Image (cartoon, rainbow, N blue to C red; front, side, top):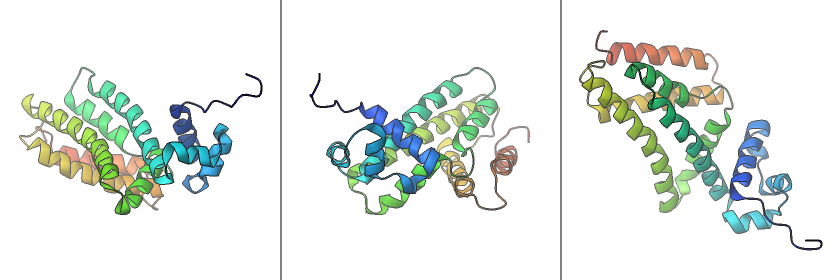
Length: 199
């Protein structure tokens, strides 16, 4: 309607724009004012919806994780050897490279979580929990089929994810001498030595 108020873009469009800005310009350029210009809203209007930059970042992470979770579910539902699906899980987990936008966002949310309230911490734990549950189920299936050694799936998943997180941080920050291919080779070797039944 001419002269009427502009309708705010859907929430998902705002979160997608935030993720795109992180990918193209880096997290430091993601300000409420810059995002507002990108989506045609004032920074005050954005703050009305998201309350703070911390909340915007967490909601963007939840949105991004929702998309990754759907992809993870599709990969893990494929037929075939469990080891192939475990490799697909690891491949999805490890950053694409230096300044991977999803991992850049994760690192920032983790950093800000030192002062986060219980609700934010619970929401972060829910994201972590989804990755963990899928890995535990995968490991349990591999053990039951005899593809994997008889490990405790929950304990092994906890340790494997700690290993993946450490390597992923190195890749995401661009630590010299640690690239994605090297990390995947290290993880494959670790899995072969500690998990595969025929190792």
